[in-house]
Length: 326
Picture: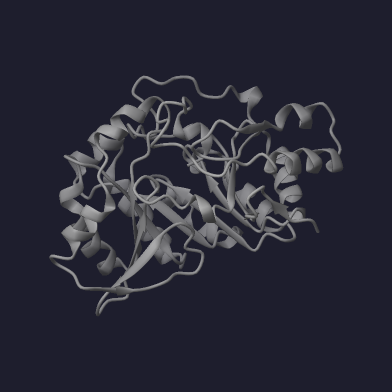
């Protein structure tokens, strides 16, 4: 089995698979207001095409798959997709990122099909502010979170994008919520991606400020977490809660990047903050063999850039976040 090694010696072993670019929420930093340029059905990869590509990535040494969107649970065949991908040889870690609005009805099925971990986007515990940020229903999200906990999906990680003048004042409440419900918590800085980039820049707050705010209420000690990725973790002293800080802007983690992203239309993005990509759908539908597809993937990884340029070239990414896969 060959490994995917990029030009900077980083082993690529993690694939974020966007199974759809559609979503039932409209978070302003992900899908801009009025956006309608979603992928047409004939251009989206079919279930078999997704599974074939994941099998090939597995044969190339990728063992960690995260299903993302848009919102992955809007796909009617998502449980079958989880079952099929989870059964592939070499895939040892299958997880999902979701807004949890549809999770209550399928959490146990997802667990039984092979989902090991779930990340849930939750930017506010205030129903009015939550609707303002997402145009979604907070009660449905909370119901989904409790269903995941009851289905023994562990860990359930809460992802909170912290935004100045919006939810910065809620970070302590979110810590309390996660302590009470045995969730893991991760704070994330806004990133200027796509048409929502300017709003993201306007609402940016460094997580150093978040940590200083929390230290007025909580005492922390160093911690680690398996599969933590870019997050740097602390534990709340006297509690089980671990809090991760993901800082793509203030302290980028490009030197340890081990991931690539595959969109729902078969585009392999080599970096969230760069335009480098490989179009796999044409190869699939023109009859490329498995060795030919693998060769194309290996060649693309050889072009993976050293780092993103969110700070130096903030306007270069024009695609919306839901197209890329989170």
